[in-house]
Length: 177
Image (cartoon, helix red, strand yellow):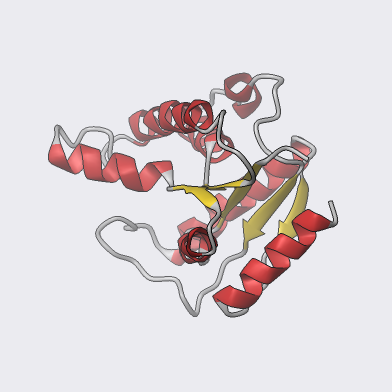
């Protein structure tokens, strides 16, 4: 098992909450590249925002996600990623047409089991960082799911349950994979 575990899926699907709980239990986690890029862009030029220049935002996300993978290379134990290079490559493909397989290359960056957060309308909300609506979030989810399947990942759909139960299911699945 690769020790890098990807948690991805629908915007507003509870991924970040799940990662915070895993971090609270002592696991290494990596924050979502997009959130960090938003903060950097707001403090700087603001050009690589998804609602200003989606291609520039996606390209930055690829760079940040690759940097995250390199930074965690020597980390011991499991490392959980809140989104990652697959998400960024799929977003870049959507924004520019550059095939995600070309961006990703032949190397598999994460464990074969990927955890996918489905659309969860009851907890989805828009804010200054998440300006897209639930329909756009569902479309993003569908692109990610299709790409993960095509890349040969074993997709584990996260249940819509309280975060502690979600964590237990993730950890249990990893023990058995």
